[in-house]
Picture 1 (cartoon, one colour):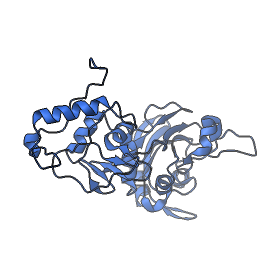
Picture 2 (cartoon, rainbow, N blue to C red):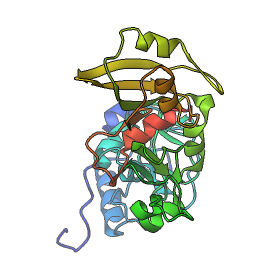
Picture 3 (tube, rainbow, N blue to C red):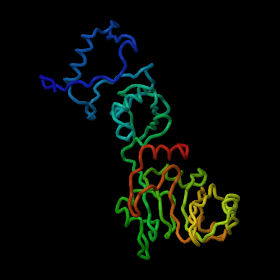
Picture 4 (cartoon, rainbow, N blue to C red):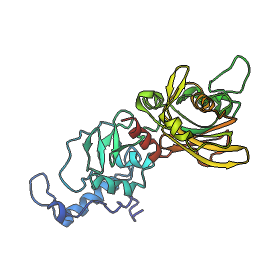
Length: 312
């Protein structure tokens, strides 16, 4: 605080006047250093903005002013970016000033631009970010013996037992069999969830399967070229043997098929029935070290990568 009790204005992150040309007043006369100092002091004496932002200046970054119309009552762009986990407020201002941020397809260079994060699409370096604070994106490590449902008339454990009341507000992206373990994505972003689950978008999913060994060298080629099943041919995108010990083998298979029990049916048809199946990856999101029965929030990068994977 200054001696008068007013808040000291934060040093501006915008380029100097030599980069933009001289600032002018309403009469067209270039503003002197004293004029600017008085304006800043007056603004600082007004206290914080109504939205709680300490960036009192609606300034422009380098380059020409953009044509984006401010949303009345909107939130400052750098504040939205920081809340979404893009970085600190100062780092977000640097991104804006560098022309790396778009709102509804328009490059925005003003640090004080006001936007509606619930209805406008915001991208950083071409990748969409989860701008609305109402959106939730969760990764769950589903244990075996849990039904991918919110309730079960037979009393089996369901998603609600793992997530509580939160489960009813989230869409699960696809399903895992009752006895299959591993990564499930849940979110309240209906459009993204729909696209991730729809086979038209071909989002790959990777599994680890415990099967009888030894595994023949041509099994991968056989699976990738296609296995004839009762409901048509199914093909893997990738296949590799992780390890073989005694009479067992651990294999990794990636495919974008979404048919029921597809991995188990393919490997059984190839002569290697699955005794344990774990999904380790959905698109760009990996299971990692997440413990069975626990959840974590997806990072901003992971959500942006999911958007990109389905063309959003």
